[in-house]
Length: 274
Ligand SMILES: NC(=O)C1=CN([C@@H]2O[C@H](COP(=O)(O)OP(=O)(O)OC[C@H]3O[C@@H](n4cnc5c(N)ncnc54)[C@H](O)[C@@H]3O)[C@@H](O)[C@H]2O)[C@@H](O)CC1
Ligand SMILES: Nc1ncnc2c1ncn2[C@@H]1O[C@H](COP(=O)(O)OP(=O)(O)O)[C@@H](O)[C@H]1O
Ligand SMILES: [Mg+2]
Image (cartoon, rainbow, N blue to C red):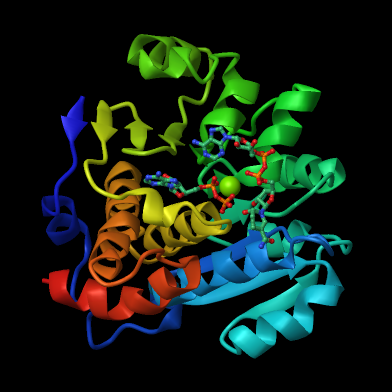
């Protein structure tokens, strides 16, 4: 297992070209946030916008529209009960699942609408729904972001067994698409076709609801704007940035809130841009 270092940030975060525009930095569609879990998509979107995605749209329960706009006038919104086919197919990156509750219909529709070249990030409730209903995965480029309980549901590898990486490798082998799997925990592990990476930073000051929703949004934002960089590298850089910011905040804070991590992203990324 290779330990990640801040080197990955210099590799991925690049100065922006003067003749670029919002279209250059990718379109992200976030799908999630039932009535109960609107905060999850707000945290997805705060992270995606602050990490530099060009255009961000949130497809969610309409009850969340005002709250989303009061946090982020930068995002567009749409009703996730409407036909999402066009919005899905017009996006570079689709993030589905944070706070999606029991909306199996939306997961099924999204999986049937995505193209093979698109990047699909599957998080939170969508992972649980796939596991419960044995849904087949789509042919798109896939990133899964389970915490240990979600990975247990998806793979059958118990949380205890997960400390042996061989079990996780074997379970990943069973996925035809060989997704990038971000297995979240203290010292998160990332399973990829290039190898397995371990995050040597981060800590329990991050154990707050919404921390994973924020990570998923950063992964989406990085994937969208660094579209020509290998997806494994952009994912690793997102995973590293998320916890590096938390570590910096933790010098003076007992807990590090997800929304504070997103707010710190633009300044943090500036330090590494080259
Ligand atoms: N403000 C909001 O709207 C929030 C919405 N959320 C959404 O709520 C839905 C349910 O997610 P939950 O994760 O709460 O529920 P889950 O039922 O999927 O998982 C939580 C359970 O897993 C256990 N667990 C074991 N190992 C763990 C690990 N390493 N990390 C995290 N949990 C571990 C926990 O103790 C807990 O019992 C998701 O869609 C999520 O995106 C959460 O993100 C919380 C905040
Ligand atoms: N003790 C810890 N040490 C390091 N990171 C942690 C710790 N607890 C939680 N995290 C991080 O916080 C995030 C939690 O993700 P998740 O459980 O999906 O949160 P949520 O669904 O509430 O947004 C992951 O990135 C995880 O690695
Ligand atoms: Mg989560």
